Amino acid sequence: MENNQNFNSPQVVQDDFDPKIFPIECLPNFLKEFSEDIADVYGVPVEFSAMSLICAIASAIGGRANLTTPKYTNHAQLWVVIVAPSGTGKSEPLRIAYKPIREYEKQELERHKERLATWNAECLQAKANNLPPPPKPKCKRITCVDFSPEKLFALLSDNPTLTICRDELSGHFQDFGRYNKSGEVGHYLSCFDNTTFSIDRKSFDTITVSNPVLSMIGTIQPSVLHRVVKENHFRDNGYLQRCLFVYPDNVERAEYNTKALNPDLVSRYDSFIAYLLNQSEPMNYSLSEEAEELFAEFANCMTYYVNDETDDSLKSLFAKMEIHVLRLALILSIVDTIDTGRSDNVISAEIMNCAINLAWYFIETGKKVLEAQPCNMTNGDIYRITHQKIGISNIPDYANGLGKSPQAVRQALRI
Image (cartoon, rainbow, N blue to C red; front, side):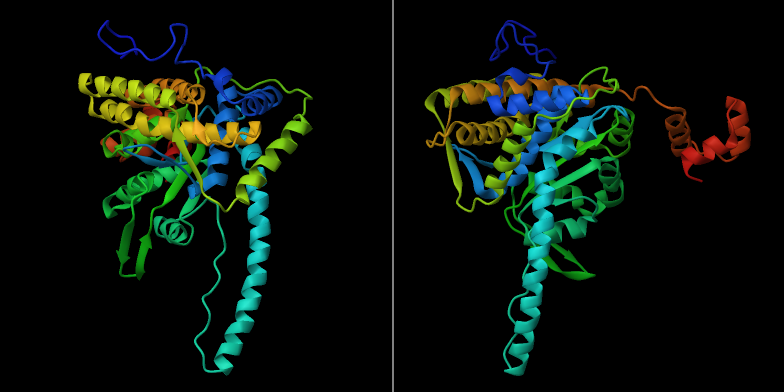
């Protein structure tokens, strides 16, 4: 479905706007400059760096910022998936964007060790005086990488604002195949909606996660993405439609160069993240009258698409774009507010228009994932699918019939 498919469909983008091209020009100036600098130095598409920075900024803000409209309250929360072949540099922007956050977490761990030492001394003193021990201090976490669902939700119970940040998301997606039947997918969807939920298991006490703000970002290869989408029924469970896919066409590995990042931009970014991490006061934003009109027009356009679409997975994709637009507008407005020194905390029409343009890009990439058949399949993909569907009882005979080595087949099947 094209966004101007017939004369009756609503139109809320400029005539010269191509939704297949990431709209870098509309981003706040500092964000645009640093995104372009990273892309130039590391030879990657600019959307890799822009969305890595935007998601890292969201992680630093967490649940302290909110955008309230008559119907919704949204936080700085995104689920971002960067899709590109192996070896094309998709991980470098993610590393740069989260570097100051990682440094903060290291410092917080050292502070937590000091708090634990003090707590242990206080516990001994309380015991000597026949008093109950003081509450155990908790270590502030911003990101998590490798975890079981139970561990993740326990972390969310202590840190309602958290970001799953994994260089490779394939392991995260494949976990859904193991945990889908026990309700974990539903818990993730509750996190996306900031809905409180509880988990009861025989192996541990009840975990209550209150008003979580869970973000997620990571990278994945196209062939792996399409395989796990098909295997784990992601088109049906609603998880994919909540993701924003950074998925440009024909990404290739760039030639080596001797360029380095602009140190002034790096310093400004590090200071910007530090400022957000150390903010304790809530940041309350609202829409300007013009921004609200733009959003209403976009929301009505998505309603038209939902009603006109026959594919349920695409219906869900269009329906979720209203939420994505508000969250993107909030994050971009915070960047613009701090960078320009404004203090009104009102989202402008310009920022709303940028968020809407980003949404059109993510509609295209979302359709690319949801509508695509498994493509560019490797031999290993074929072996695994054959084994899943009909079984390979005699690997040497199967391999010989294909002119391949039994070792290659066993390796792909991990046998």
